[in-house]
Length: 586
Image (cartoon, rainbow, N blue to C red; front, side, top):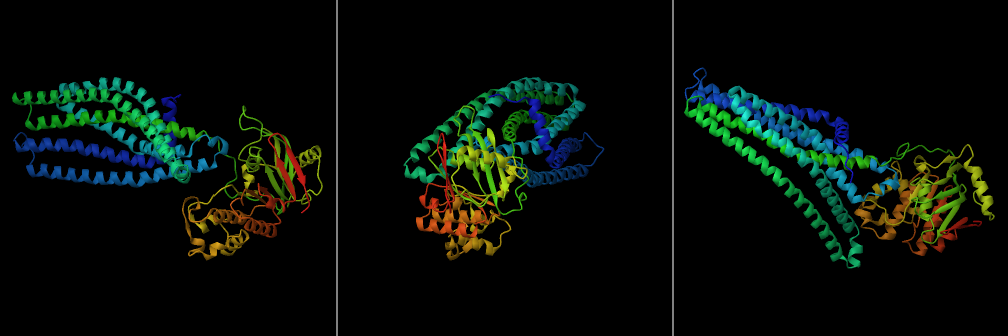
């Protein structure tokens, strides 16, 4: 695995953190104030002890105690403010970045995004976004505060005893050398940990989503064993990470212990000789703690930086996924006519350069207002053709265009393939024709295979088809889709559905999905095995209702059901290496 350079990651984190500068500044200011109060507390403690022991007669004991109380109160208030800033603004920053990336993923091109497992994507949106935001808003200000704390404590100790201050910081070269070697190796190990966590999340998500399949195939033990294998792999990576960090941490702790012993010995010897006061000894011990604490914190910043760099690399991978060029969720209709046709000319396509050609010089017409059945064996390209029409994939060669009404509603006589190709080529070159792009999805209403309902109410699912639909329009669409059962439910349109529409049968969920598509004001309706879960009588009712109430639309049925073919004006039979075009009168 090739890792990006530190400067690349630093630039990306700096650019990404622009939206969080206010919170970072607040955390930095609060951190600086806390450092100032900590150093003030050390000085006030020394002053109080010196007053109590008679070493400093210039101030009263009541003044010193009042000063300590005031400093402690300031520390408490600053701690509360810091906690609120991190909690409230931290959640807002995470939500903002996660929402931005989530929107980008939804707008990403379909095919490149398919190489990421959904569990992997969820893991990146949750864990990696949180790591990057925490790094930008909390860890960087904390690093600044830590450096300031070290500098302030060292200068104060240096002012009190120069020799002791130099002895205490002798541990720094060891820290720098160890940190550099530690960081380089830990980046690789952290990547392995994150990738394994993503795979585990994918196993959990898929298995719970398809628990019915796992149960009925009696493969619970197999899935649990797969999870256990992933957990063992994660355990090995974490064990390796812990083992590698133990040596570095132990070396650093030895240096800290030595520094404390040296400071304490130095102080008591000088106190015995009368060279310093008792308050100075206490201050020495406190300042050594305030010098070593930042250095110790800097060692903890190493895994923080590694985690942030790893998260940044994983999020940068998501940003490399190309985004579709669209006009937005609700693009304007490009055609004024209610009927729109589709012309496919010399289409050529394969999913990869090494895979077989799905289409090779394929041409076809879906005239405005026509009703077309697309049939064929598995792997013949039915779903791929739908993906082309919806601009989810791009042709390797050829063109697909939409054109306005002007052609006859349907082909009434069979056409030779060469004649049809010439006709399609003429139409795709027409000035009024528009090449298929993601922005032209506004012309399509699509019912995919399977259960595609989302959790929420039936009303919320229907409004996805048309957010401006009225109650009357929703009821009309439900009747057209033979989904009258909704009116008999206790909560009607406001019935809550679980994931994938749990609460309805497959046939009921399919009819609600059809109603949702009918609500979308688009001139072309695509139904991909949309009636597969319906009985023959209900299917006939749904098709008759659609043909009656939506006859102005261009209808495409991907189907294996013979009942659908009776209502079609033309039939497109796809084969793996050829296609047969059949036209018939309605």
